[in-house]
Length: 179
Length: 179
DNA sequence: CTTGGAAAGTCAATAAGGCTGACGTAAATT
DNA sequence: AATTTACGTCAGCCTTATTGACTTTCCAAG
Image (cartoon, rainbow over all chains, first blue to last red):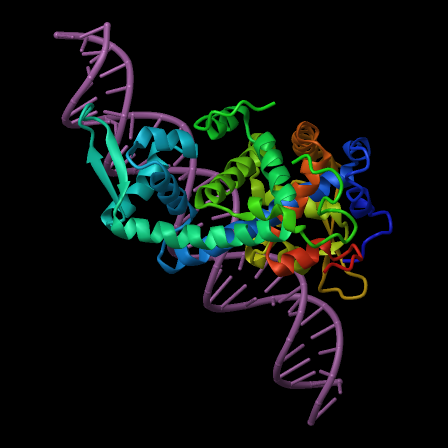
């Protein structure tokens, strides 16, 4: 992969602390490196869970469902559909197998009996832990290596990169006025 | 995040200062938010190109191929397979449609006639520009809103999150003694 | 020169996981 | 009673990944 000498992306991104303006002049090449960094990082980020899931015959769709059910137990199907941004048919296929395999439990709502409140079973929680342990380990290592300032910046840029409604949902539960 | 000088991204300033230890005590919840931030941000990050691609009957696989062919013209199929981490059969299907649609040109190698050197045609370059313009706009906006220090941290953490070999490839062309 | 292996690329079949559309049921709302 | 909402399911399609089998090309050893 012979690269031309014109690849100055690295150099440009270095001098950070000296007046931010220099960095805010963003060349296409700098942005391209950011784009590729997202691509490669996201792949690394999902690699460990993918291995665990693959061994059990599941995919990323199952991971996402398990994660968000574990995060907010008792969430409804519609709620999950909104968060994941998939159709109910897609989610249902995943949910059906998870329930059949005894990882997720769907309890009929007490107030509104149309609703199904989703919970992880013991086995489900165990898988959730295995998955998130792997992912947390990688993220913790990255955080450690990069340092606290980098972590804050990382989170900040990611938040800005989300769609507005997603960001609202992401920041919502935490009452923190930003900006 | 306003840490001013001493920011980790400085030339070779690898060692994280001990002052940050308090921030490096990472709760599971903090890590979980980081995980979800990656998920939502990546979705936002791919949303714009997905729309453009969908309108033309392509998917993300086409985007990735076009991107990396545009980045390093003349690359071979095997090279692309390594970068994208897919099988040659998967790549081939995508490549076939792109060539049939006149977006990519596969020139038989002069030295080794088994190789196909891939190039974007005019039309291919135009689509590449449309796709990366959309993605760059979002990234530029995020960068602007987050500020230069955040951007440096963002890149830093992403690099740490990659698999080691991917990181080597990503940083490779830039001769920088790290560590 | 021939032959056999390795590398590069192609074709075929299969599966996961998205999607839309249509339909059905139970429960809540008007 | 009629409508809306929440959920489930069947059917069919698309994209994108997989493995297996094949052709073309190159190179090196006999």
